[in-house]
Amino acid sequence: MKPIVQISLDLVNIKEAIETAHMALRAGVDWLEAGTPLILAEGLHGIRALRREFPNTPIVADLKTMDGGYLEAEMMAGAGATHVVVMARAHEETIRCVVKAGRDFGVQVMGDNMVCPNMIEGAKRLEDLGCDFVIHHIGYDERRGIAARGLRMPSPLDQLREVCEAVKIPVQAVGGLSLEQAILCPSYGAPLVVLGAPLTIDADSFRTADGNLESSLRMICDAIHSASCSK
Image 1 (cartoon, one colour):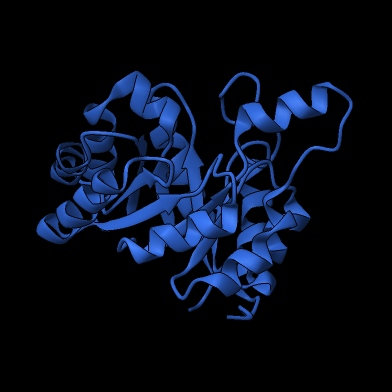
Image 2 (spheres, rainbow, N blue to C red; image 1 turned 135 degrees about the vertical axis):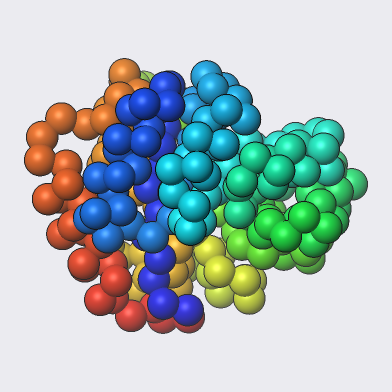
């Protein structure tokens, strides 16, 4: 699978999300993600607005579903999402419901292994239950809390190679990646590269990062798209 670049629109209003998405697509981003902050702030209106503005672009709805799986996936699909996210820590029936809704409504399912006691087993569980992709994810609070105590901040790269080797479906690494780390993901076997905080979104204010973001994004996209995936 050729590397794909996804931008996480972890913003809290539709206007800024659309402006950032236009800039990202000009820079070479392939997929848009309606981040959890955007879904919390704008709900289905945010998904619909992105779909109206970008009729042909894949849109990931990062709802982090834990229950009510069929209904939540159906609602996101109806609003225009092409991908939905369910958590590995959800009950297996919830994951099955999201997968069934994905098949019924033509959306793909991304399973997120965040806070699994065993991240590799969590990824395998998601694949076994029918997910189309695995998101190998170190959470925002976990990273920042551990770093605030003066300890080494965990990275999704710590076990990324092992996760990629454990499953046959494509893997995406999420969680505070630096520019250099994001570009390395395909070499670990993870072809789906997500760009969010701190690369494109200010991790404290949940606003688009300052600086020449479009130029930086173009450089990142070029590097990732030219990379070869080891899987």
